[in-house]
Image (cartoon, rainbow, N blue to C red; front, side, top):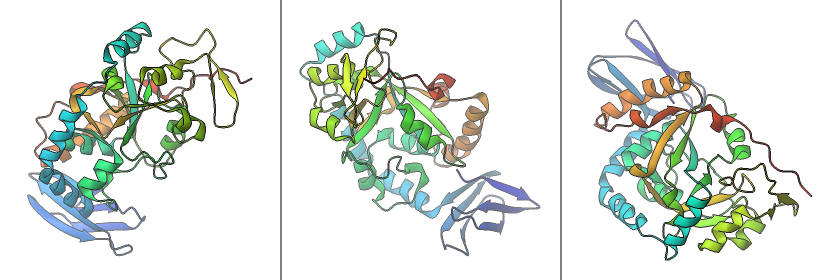
Length: 311
């Protein structure tokens, strides 16, 4: 997020490099300002008193999204093709009372989600805005992407991958949310299943698209990346994977309609997100999208759940 302060018709904000940028602000106008330290360019827009500060890369990225509307629509239609075993998947999902998948993200990325009409993979992001884009509406969550699945959108079952989430949300000046998603994404045609972290060699060797691969996520014991066995003890809910590092990779696109909720840790976090998102979406003509109805307070996603003991 780019936070700014206004005093005596002057606006001030901090560049991503840490340098303070100051400029005169004018009513109902657009200005381009450059950081004197790193030379990053910003667009400052004042639309009838609603002020938005964007990096130039974000401004350009939004134009590129508009040019790819047909491509995004095609992705959406492809996502609605089910696996051959979809009936059996539905049975097992119901048997385990699985109500949702989850995917965590920085709040800035919600702008990108709304503009694209859904969550996009790194591969799609690179096609839309370019691999080197610095637009924080399309920030890359996992820079290293050790699983090498650039077309995969990483999801967990019922609860976030708590270890990865804890590490990411400890970043300074960041606001995170957890998106809950429809469980029918599990039986989309090319969805992949990993019983453990998708970047681990053991999980990659056992991954697959079939029902039998999905059910390995709930085995009585699973092997982690260190060769240790993680047990599934009776107290664990049927809907929970044996390891909270189990992953489901949905290919390339998750439509907006499949997002059940956008969850925040506290009322303060939700209010901060609302205040930041509203003028940006209004600026780009997306104020009519009912995103606020998906906003919820759900601190349970920020809680750590004890894993079962190792043998």
